[in-house]
Image (cartoon, rainbow, N blue to C red; front, side, top):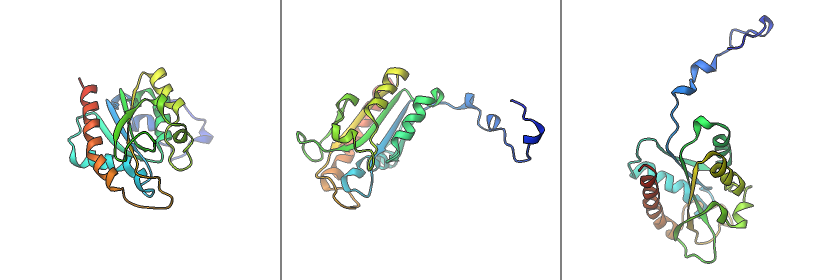
Length: 186
């Protein structure tokens, strides 16, 4: 550890390198992020799926399910910067609004297929940018999967709780995610 001049020493200085040894940290194989705002109706789909995964499903070792709320960009940025934190696979769970899908329909999309309105939805939702997802896959070799559910209708005001269609989509999404996780662990 570098030595500080006497004038900079203070009795409260902590050596964090020994408190948190990086070599002992083992990154998870899979990290599942549930994105969304629980106060905007169906936008809370991602957090609801994470709650169900953590409560009702036996997640394998080295798999983490995290309610990212609206802060997914910060967490993805950490993976870009810190190699020791990177999982092999990131699964993002979110709601989506597309005209060609039925309410409650669960499906996967490629990062390149994120609709333009979702890309620019950062102030409320902060769904990860396409560039960040592409960079994770291209430069770090982290696989990125996106599991989404078609919402019934966008919330126009603060509305807690999911529509019936989205409530019924939660177990379907959990099953799909567990299939993706199983394929990653092979």
